[in-house]
Length: 176
Image 1 (tube, rainbow, N blue to C red):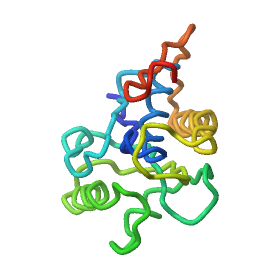
Image 2: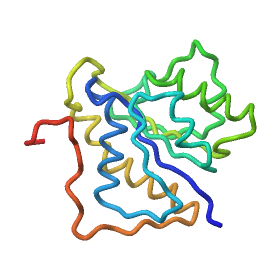
Image 3: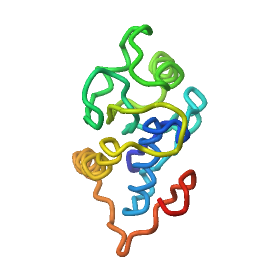
Image 4: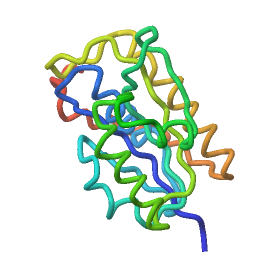
């Protein structure tokens, strides 16, 4: 039996840089095939409703905008224990409350993923609109490489698509 895990992109694609997690997830899906034990999940802004999608997973890699001090486009990788036990008033992501509440509840119940990693990208602009700013958009390649590294640490090597598919950025104008 293989260990099940998921890569989750979180964000609101209609609030500029907040959609980076979804954009990177779509980019990864367009460029790589994964074994059945790895699921790619567009978490959008679902928060706590992701319970059924992650209840049987042993690990998660979460990609999201990280609303903390720093330079736009800066990438931070946090192990689960460094972010799930933060006090509620420490808001790092617009989706933190629902999703982190879910993870904490699952931990309390003894269910859900044991291993968590958050790849957070510091946003420049969280106002309304579908476009990602240049410094945040420039993180797609480095974050993809970080995801591949984290998977490799678990012994998972996805197959590269040749040629890659066109990413499904359904929320962007056709020219993007």
